[in-house]
Length: 328
Image: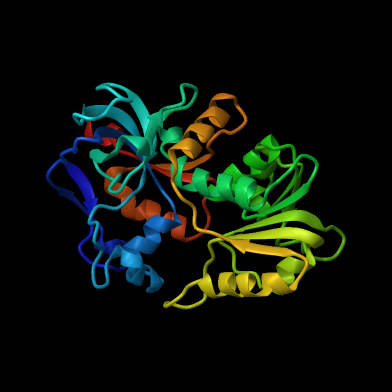
């Protein structure tokens, strides 16, 4: 099968489209014929091996342990293991697994759920990583309630577009922060207000928010706290910058250390992929409360270009790799 493979850390130049063996599912696993896969900042970080902290965390010190990139996926079940009870051959599924940038991908059955009937494979393929992060950030860590004022920084990005819609589904008054060319998009997905950060400072003191979600930003804590209500909650989701060793982790650690000494709640987390949350996201999509936002679609052979586009920070929503369209 064709797959995007890397044998060393580096720029997009380390990625190769190669023929490799098709994975063989274990007893509790499902083999999926991939129709589409998503790319997100995590794909770039694992490709580059940056910050170095991720190598120490077990992804491979000198080279990536998993050679095939990608996690988000949607496709049809090709084969099931002997113990699998939830799926059968031909079922349309979506979810997450290691090595989704390939013609076939394999994972435990609890990593997948039936594909929402009202979206395409391409839309379903971008839900897992960003959807988990947005859902857990808004619902579990932000604890957003009806009527609260919620500010989402990076509202036009992969996580941000999910977060805006999920916060609206919980009854919040949502303000999205984005660049000039993306304000219309942010309003179109349900934001009550959109702030163009090139023209306006959301922390100018005119408005304070009950919950702020900062998605992969690099603004100082003191700036974010100026926009936060006296007993509000700040949730830092990822972060960029901060050097090659720790990336944005330093800002997150400072938030955790400061939080016990101030009235505001300063939080951060690493999202977990749970089957219950995948099913919850499926229900939100099928009910029309959440619709995955697609920026661009690339064929499998152009995965390096897709990741380069994502790294430049211009994406509006999610970037797709169409696998079946190229390899059928």
